[in-house]
Image 1 (cartoon, rainbow, N blue to C red):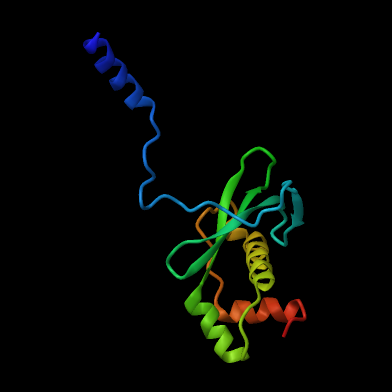
Image 2 (spheres, helix red, strand yellow; image 1 turned 30 degrees about the horizontal axis):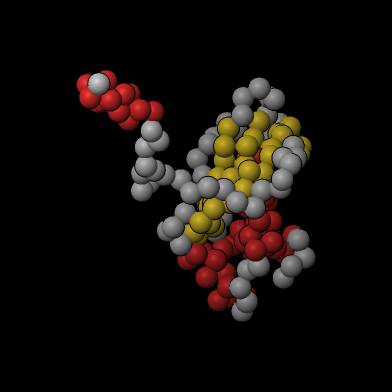
Length: 145
């Protein structure tokens, strides 16, 4: 009977959930309860569909906004837009105010649209990193300056 218990314990050990590694991604937050697919007609000639999946603090003084993107309705990929604290601080010192959370989302979305408009980035999956100049340009286009 003891032998049977030991074998059972070995089997159950295989099914137990392993602890998350310290490098595991943090969960996304802030996404709407029901995902909404939106469309963007880019200057590159492609028509993209995208879904906002949420954002997370990466633990390195930066925030990542994650979008699912497709240009052919078949192959979806994730694209992250990373707003690092140093860039936001640089913008804030020049503007004399801090960015609002809704402005951070708008900056991420406009950075995504810029990548859609750039035909050399078609199919790219590396994260986007808007600069302080990009932040100024985006907020100016939105009338937030």
